[in-house]
Length: 141
Ligand code: HEC
Image (cartoon, rainbow, N blue to C red; front, side):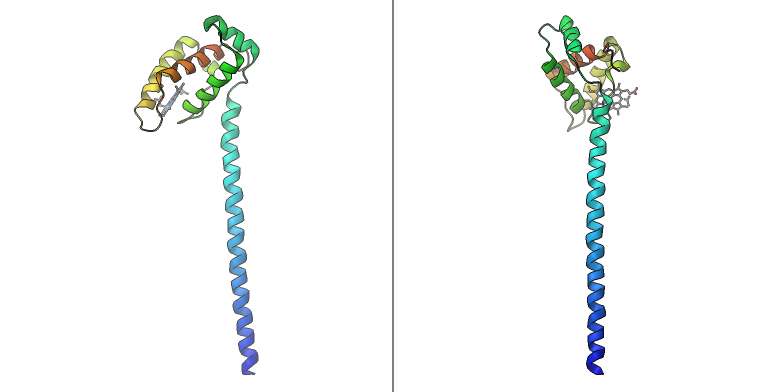
């Protein structure tokens, strides 16, 4: 009688332990899958906002920036996404004409350079303006 009571106690203790372990691993799985989901969503929303760059865009850009190529335009777009997407989603180039972008970029570069971890160099500013000037008149919005 005494022995069987002890056995049944052990049985329930084991049950509780495996329940706890099951709950703990469930929690792990849930938190892993939610963080992965959040990550892809952020990436998707940023990429979707900017129109794809084409040969026609690069050719139009080369009229103002001699020697501009599609590879160069793509590189500038990536820089734009990184630098001008650091605090908010990158704005669409078609949002403003090139003349307006010049003032906005100057203002935003000042803002970026006044925060300790989001600096934009003069060369990067030139590349960003090259991209925005070219893409502000893109047919694709
Ligand atoms: C250090 C953070 C930071 C960086 C980097 C940054 N911005 Fe901004 N930007 C802001 C903040 C904050 C606002 C909103 C307040 C304001 O207008 O000053 C804003 C607003 C804007 C707006 C106006 C938004 C609207 O819908 O009217 C534009 C356009 C813009 N940014 C473009 C840029 C561009 C282009 C770059 C890259 C050269 C850039 N931003 C980089 C912080 C940043």
